[in-house]
Image (cartoon, rainbow, N blue to C red; front, side, top):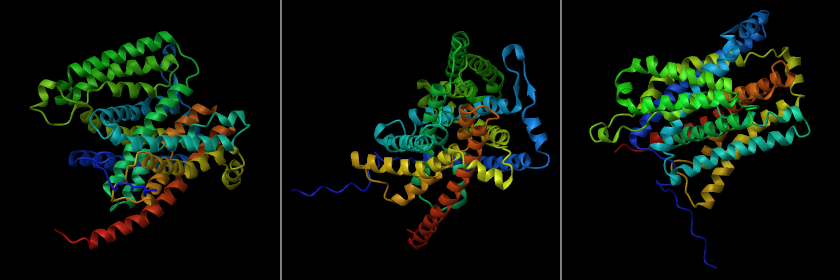
Length: 432
């Protein structure tokens, strides 16, 4: 029997890689997300401390203050405004990034996209299966199956930035691409599984307004590119109307952000491409609005969502008697890295794709562990899964916080060891 031919070491067409311009763009995204991740952790910690302090009542009173116009069903608490309103900004950025990756980025070709897509799918399926297996038989707990499927890109990138100064750029690109696909899956889950009823008329009106928004953005892309204030004065009011209508339809309002992001053009008009090599409107908007998302919207959401009254050490220990907590922690800390690493290994064998020569499987496992930091979207799914005030609602948040800390610590230790190895290698490499 003839020996099996060895796997190729590297195929630049099939493993996610990037041009110099793409690498610089991703590096800029990572730096902004790093700052956002630090702010996210700081605001979440502040909320947790305040909610367990002698002044806890004032925190919950602030979170539950209601403002808005009741006839339009927009009289919401500050916590709901943060989850439904501010987080729509975050999802708008997700929509921009998704469209750019599929139109002009590393996901535009199947041969390039197959690894991160498969890894993301594995990182969703395995945690969901583990969680479901742990809470089996508990009807209420089973509603939270999607909580451990999400990855918090800002938190994960902040950790990677702090400990990964010498890690290969291919690893950073892999994490960001994986997170982009993970976000797409999370958005689909929220839209499909967490919509109880749909009001058809507001939904149709919302889609019509989104179409108008897209037509204006497409038709006047150069105008919005050159005049930064135009988007605030023209597109923002239209986007708010679309958000309000989608909120009234029964679909989670953050989906409006994604749909609006999808309508923004990525490329220049054909007539302008020969003379204009600068970034398209989607990348321009991403550059303009990412600080608003990472620096304001997500931290405020974390502040209003992470405040859970644990009840001291005894309350923390008792929370772990709830299968919801055990299911989320095990699914994020074990299921995420297992699913990502296993799916990546399988697809490289099935399609005979070699890893980038700069990477090792332990690096993929480290990124998988880093993806176990399920914070922002996991908290949102927890809000949608369990009724406010129920034990499972608060326990799920305790589990998300605990799992995210464990995943961050373990990933930091593993990737720090790898970072030191890569630093020694770079110091030993002779300069040309």
